[in-house]
Image (cartoon, rainbow, N blue to C red; front, side):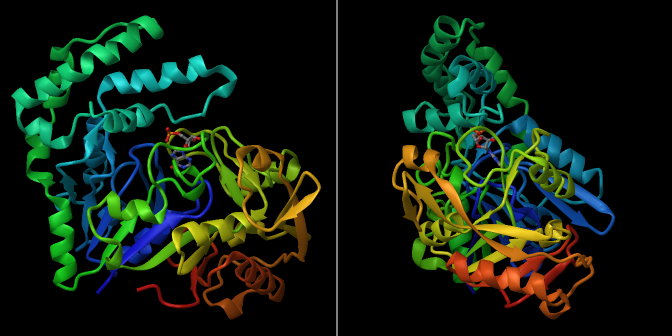
Length: 427
Ligand code: IMP
């Protein structure tokens, strides 16, 4: 059986948590391959709502092994807070495994993330302030601290010492903050060592062996295509590889193992943080999408910017990820609009563009060209098959599918596991 990749097609918050959770019962291992606790998954099971930030959503599926891959950056205090919170509700985390190669977020990087944003002024990124960017920067700079370093105090001390001069220089001389001592950072990290030790594994080996045995592995991406550090709306992006390619580097399996790339796409568009967003609605329609769709960040509580579906973005996501299947989410939020606009192309400096513009400047100037679809007023939250949908909703979905560059496998009509219309099987 195969490896499946699941990623977000837009700017995140497409409802990947629900999709992963649904697949979770049919897969043996769920791997988080990038990002950290900047992510936020809300999973609703019956009357229970779980907000996950760092733990892979497979944690909620009995029998499934959740894996934190090498591409993830781990805030240990958040990890254990989340484990304690979820175990207090009767969910066992004893199957969780963590890559020895994953980087940890030391406290100084949380400070640096926040002060750096303040110093950027109107060029700020709008980060989640969790230390994600500085920790990935340290990884590339080769001054990062990895999970495996915790297992050897002498090495840990050397690594923190290695980062200290650079980091304190920035903190003190550039940002006017307090310097840290090696002792305080080492002590802070070592308080978790006894708990993390049994979870630490060579996860690349573990995953490849599982695939050799015929088990199914789901590789879940945090954030989304347009937040990817290479393929997103740089510099208004996160610092990791959130597209399908990141699934291989972030987990240690080869590309030939991947059979399917599933992209989750919302029936409209949202983004948090700064940066261009062609179909953004700054009017009452945007407010209505935000309220009906509960578009507030799971991690930061920030109100999300809302706008219409952008088929140029969907096609771009299909291309850069090699999408085999789209999972459409939150169709129910669009109930009650007389007409629903869909962006089919952009106009940039008087020219029509059917594909994502090449440059940041062009994308900033992109004006959506809309096609309008008739809306529906019937409540669709109880629909369980495509045929249960009103004709206008069916036409809207089929139009999106035709414009988006890959077939739709399922449609979400509400937050619950059951509120999903399956069009073709994913596993
Ligand atoms: P960072 O990942 O905290 O460095 O933030 C960089 C950008 O990515 C900001 O615009 C964040 O709002 C955005 N971002 C990070 N994680 C998520 C997510 O899970 N959903 C949506 N946006 C995110």
